[in-house]
Image (cartoon, rainbow, N blue to C red; front, side, top):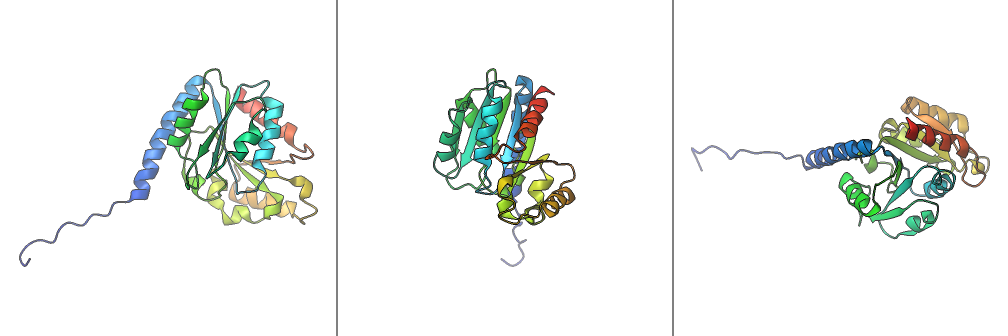
Length: 224
């Protein structure tokens, strides 16, 4: 109406509010994990990178000596959780019902089912996605990005945020490098250019290449 002030307009950034809420819970989870002496690894990659198979080989090597638990995130099915079962560590599946990433509240609920007593290493296999997980802290001690040779050398350049937020990068399926004409030098250079802080591991779950070095890294990380 004439003579009346226009109603005040407000813009609410829902995305920012959601991220802030997630960050607050992630920080509380991290403090709980630290207090319990649990080293938490958040494993992120695109679908089909081979992370489940590599994690299975990892569990076979270290779960018998380091009390380990696993949380597996997927949009649907429990296929990956079943593949990791029987490797010496309890496994809890989280189905996100369409969410393209895990969030801190999902991890909190999963740890209640998993049980943390006596655990020293918690591995979180995130939903296969190179975008959304980069923005969602899960209370981890270490974020690792997996990159398979079948994906090409340019993924670090196309998805820099995830690599920049990771402390390690694991190149997988190295046994297929020659077959897919993988340019190793270019890939490693791209990772280092985007994420100079990231330690790089070159691995093959099929041949065992690089697994000793990768597992030693996890052992030393848990011990520190």
